[in-house]
Image 1 (cartoon, rainbow, N blue to C red):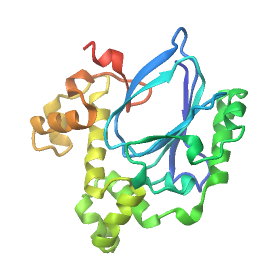
Image 2: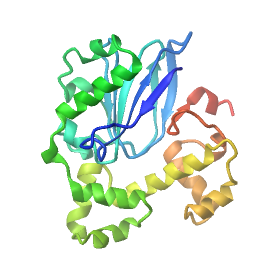
Image 3: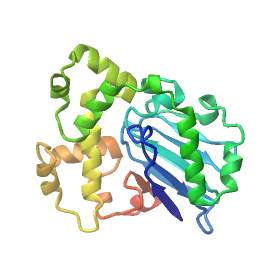
Length: 255
């Protein structure tokens, strides 16, 4: 199906929102079955012209969804810890759950306006909406700095000392804002890097990936992968797609 994706442009949004995306109708498809692999991030999904828009809270495990393939869908993928300033609900309360977007946003005519726009204009409208709804006082710079450090490869156990923060204070604050604790988030990040390596067109061997990403061995990689993805690594080998954390469930269960 047609897909357009871009990063946000406004400086206030860049630390909080990873990407905006738009998908068009898939020819001949009324339903698209997907597995969303965990990233530790939240996202909102607006069904253009329809009332069933949702927000998916920070994901620490895979979730299977059925998406209407005959609709235009517009969404935002937040950075870890980036959703709370837009919805005024602690991410810890939304982890691994999906809620109607109307329960946290007064959508008014937004979905209908999306349906009338070209893809690039719809993304511009969503960015303007996010900027309008941003509550800067709810941004937590210390947690965002800790998340960036873990994402860059710094060990979760060392982040508090590196930032000069009290670990007993940082850990619950991180969990409240990101949705999971620092060590759990570190595991999710390693899983995401594993997915990226495995889904290359010509991926390295699993033993090589395990060694490069700090698993104890290939068996450890396989256990962790099964925990987060619900499938074996071999089922996703070389399965490159437009979105690394989205998997066509019909295809993986045919392998």
